[in-house]
Image 1 (cartoon, rainbow, N blue to C red):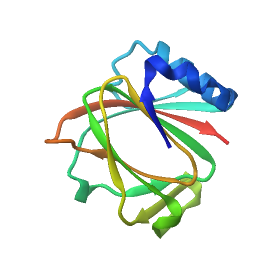
Image 2 (cartoon, helix red, strand yellow):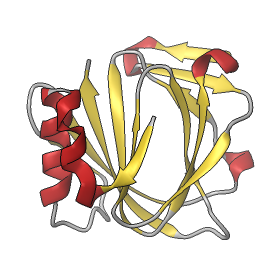
Image 3 (tube, rainbow, N blue to C red):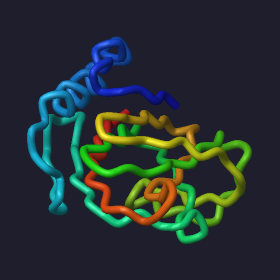
Length: 147
C-alpha cells in the first residue's frame, strides 16, 4: 500500500508500465468525476469515475483483488480508506467474475483529501468510502491496473 499526493506521482512510474499510464492519466485529469463513468486508458488500465457520499465505517466493508491493483485518487471531497494486510483478515466471500474478495477484520483508517491517492495491491485489503468526520460528497477516480 502506498499513499501520496498526485504531485509526487512520477516517483512511482518505476512500478511498471500500467502504473505509469494510470498515474499519468490521473495527473492530467481535468474533469470533475461527479458522474459515474468508465474510461479505458489502455489494455492495462481502466479508470472508473466513482462519485458517492461517504459513510460510517460500520456501513463499509473490506475488499481485495487478485487480478488488479487499484489507485484510489480523490478529485474532490475527502474520505478515509481502511487498510489491513489480507492475511490478517477473514474471507467472507469471493466473486471471481468481478475480481472481488470480501473480507472481515480490523484495519487502520487512512485519511485522503483532494489530490491524494492510495495504491493497493492484491495483498492489501482496503475499505473505501469511509467518512472522516461526517458524510460528504467525494468525487473519486479508481484506476484498475491489470497485473
